[in-house]
Image 1 (cartoon, rainbow, N blue to C red):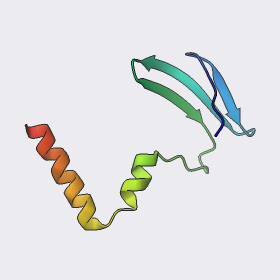
Image 2 (image 1 turned 30 degrees about the horizontal axis):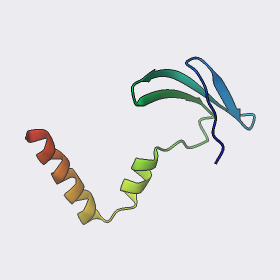
Image 3 (image 1 turned 180 degrees about the vertical axis):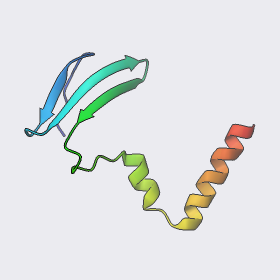
Image 4 (image 1 turned 90 degrees about the vertical axis):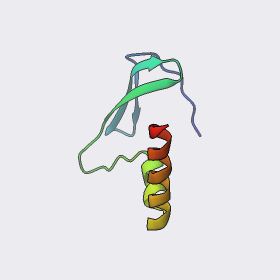
Length: 71
């Protein structure tokens, strides 16, 4: 794994088509911008993991999340 340190407004490139820019940072959250060709898919890891679950596991996850919000 390559580890880079960047400040707000700084960027780095992956190959010659993908530009990653640090937009902001608040406590433990970093916002990044990704400039990539539309033909290149960009996915968040948690969405990919969720989509790999079985349908009954998805239902359980949503039920638990809604219960947490209602408390």
